[in-house]
Image 1 (tube, one colour):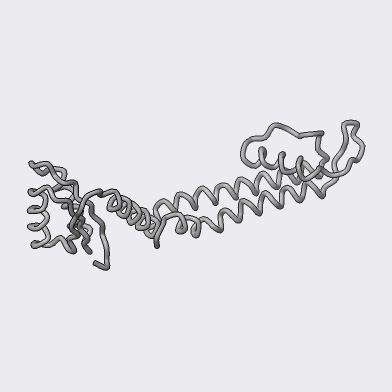
Image 2 (cartoon, rainbow, N blue to C red):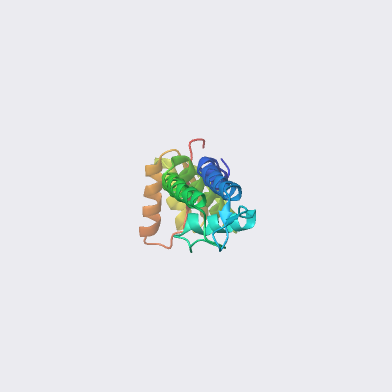
Length: 185
């Protein structure tokens, strides 16, 4: 897992396909169902452009009315069905997005990305401390007192949380250690 973006896309694949399918079906229906002209006479169906335009603003908002001409009863029925399909599609997509925000693999990918960027931004030599047990703690405090940059890798998230608290409450100027929770140190 190198980036959060592929994880997010993988999880959002089905909701995005649902939205695209709802829009495509709605446009296709409006292109196939005959309309009426301004005099009430039968008219050919809408063009793809007008159908896409109408579906775009109707499925995402409350709509602006029947454009470019009033709809036939068949078109009105189809638009009503499409509005409900769009509401269900958007609800599914939004709920999937909310679930994605709580997804552990995504949170891990975001944390790893932040860690990598933080380590890349270190512009001076630094040490990597593998483990933050008793010895790692002593070594980190010694490096901090010497104002030497270091990065801590540890299996235990509790230990690195302690590191962040220690760095922010230290009486000396902390060297702002970078940390990450890694299973493979």
